[in-house]
Length: 260
Image (cartoon, rainbow, N blue to C red; front, side, top):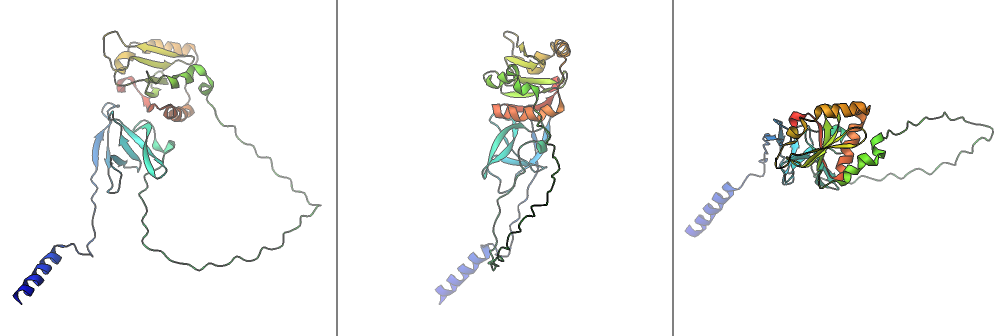
């Protein structure tokens, strides 16, 4: 009898330690302030839902992001049902203009319900057209698709093969032209002048940041762009951003020399 009482008491203690089936689990998501190393002084908040894949976070406007091995925050996109990093750097361009979608958590089916199937009514007899009736359709004008001039210039698109010297692209603020380089301390900067890529070489034996390399060439760049009567169009920016991603380059967006 004494042994039976001990067993009952032990079971009572164990049951009291188990969570109640009526108690809901609450997940508290704390915002985290992170820094974007490719932009001087840029930081933003992210959070991580409990069912987010490892290494992934969500911005406050709902877009998935992750950090590359180099520490750069980039947007993610869905490859089927899985998230995959893109070449679009967070802060470089509005995510609404990119071919990416907001984070969608996996759906959970709580219950199923069988519904009766209503048979379709029989198809009515086809209506025979009146041979004496004619309908004039209004002419529809289809707007031509905009194709930037640089997409057809081999002198411009050749930069897509320079992956040994380029891993990121963007739009220089002044003069407003495309620019490309590789890493934090590149060997060379490439700046589009309207007809060719102008090369700015790093000084021999000196490890320089892009801002240090370009500051002594800004006046010459402005003159070349003016002489070529070149003007970058706003509509070209999103197209180049997508093309840079196709080439495998990080898209850095509009940048000022002080931010390079």
